[in-house]
Length: 216
Image 1: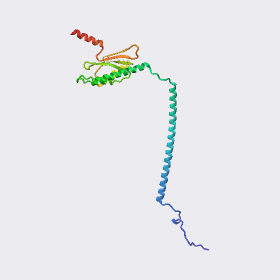
Image 2: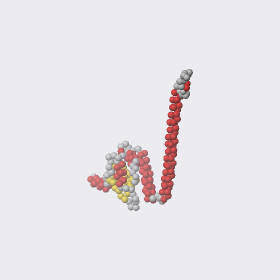
Image 3: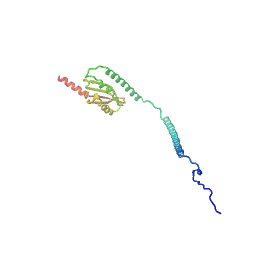
Image 4: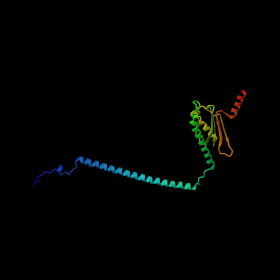
């Protein structure tokens, strides 16, 4: 018996192959899937970051509460603060001296002095001096502003050097030198009295004035 092929089928043609999506649609679906996956990764990263931030915030709040409790306990162990009478007296003295100095400054700066004899800069820059522990309660300007004498109080003699050094740096006091510096302790007082003068020792000035009188 002989076999003879009656019909020939080609299963490789598109008719017998499973349906395929168009290339453009496949690209679109693939791109959408990639974007969705990226968004999921970003969302997971943000959630992890927020969770970590929340844990850090909780830890910081716990530390703050712990430190606040420690502060309260330490403060409860310390004795109540009591104002020292001597310090209060020094504060009141400094306040009165400051108020007096400000009144003098206001008075002098309001005066219309003759040109070449104005002491406004000398007085105003003297008022700008702020050295802790040094209180100025009296000053005098003589010989048309060429000589200056300062009187006050200090709690440490070493601060006089700082006071003078910062004063002579000011414009109105440049080129001036305090040739006489005297610091003395008063009885029953915590502070020292000081005197600064650009003319030298007062006794030397009296001797010079006496010799000048005899010469005349």
